[in-house]
Length: 474
DNA sequence: TGAAATGTTGGGGCG
DNA sequence: ACGCCCCAACATTTC
Image (cartoon, rainbow, N blue to C red):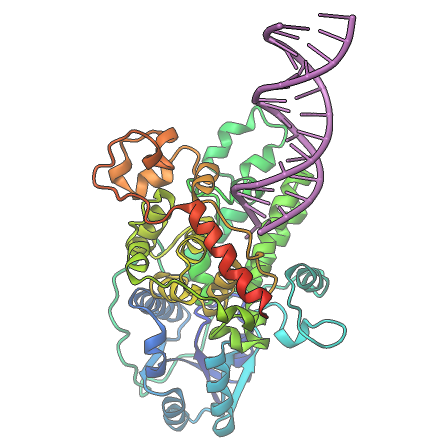
């Protein structure tokens, strides 16, 4: 008996409950549907990453004796056709929680034997509710409950040893060609490598610290330094796994499992706390997926609707300067250039540029949200939307509106030597650390680098006024 | 997962 | 020796 494994955002073989359920049920035919309705929602950069990931997944499937069937068309039409061709009796798919995915799957389930299996998250959004049955909207209690719901250990399913062959008569289109991404190779092996490197491996740099450190284990593994390093945009202190998590090349459960292993192996309280901090970041990701599930209106506007009445300035020229990395604030411009050139930006840098767009330029956070989605390799509706609403102070458990970043102080704190700016804004490479964060305040040659497009002190007050206005009239 | 404004304290210079 | 002022350093409040 044949069954279809409909692959969407679960491009992996390890810890795949859906795949295992399908394998128990029958001979699995792995299928990816190129859905024309999704064309507008995925940027060229992310699209290319996806094609590369599918190519690599196909290669992995071949080592197991299987192969990927790639077809174009609306999912319902393609799946109907494939059920006929294969004689399959069921379609297994990992449940996805975006508004589009839920609507799509609901429709398809009416017509076809679709079986959705939870696997993208650790807890289903309906399984992590408050005692009164309503969803959490504040992170800390959510996180507490989320942890309390964890079983003692998450059993991580290995990738299947072998998979049944897909009959030759089932034809596949060619997966579109893609340029390999040198910074983020789109394979499951790479995702696993990154996870292990971050959570278990001794780093070379840390070796040097060992001799004079009482906390040698702490120094040796990145996850144990995370609490100290995670906000430093000039260091490689994060796991850099977001693109893999977004496409399910790496499972969230697997990441959580590794975090918990690291927590239990920590040799001292500081290390344990550091690994806990990283786990908390994974829970933030889950939190925003839950929020989008329970409050789908956040896709289009503020979680707190009164903030949709803010009178934005929305100056198109200033928006262009922000996108191009020519605001005159070096830390902002460095991050915006990194975004455009690589599709990945450190989380702290994302917060700095988001705060600058919203609270210094007073531009609608949705403009920034869209630009991020167009450029980020890890662009994820739930996480990106949650992050922007947090920064704008309009969402669940958001930063209070009056918590306004000072881009110069952020720069000094989190890029103290100016290395990050130096890397992405080469025209300022001749400046040293004391001049580089706010070069216009110094008597230095800017070499074509722009003057600040807005005065922070003025902008701060303007934003406080604009937010206060909608708050008092709420 | 801020920063600015305002308040408090205490050491040192100095008449 | 004493009081006064200055102001850095730290703490608290406010946005």
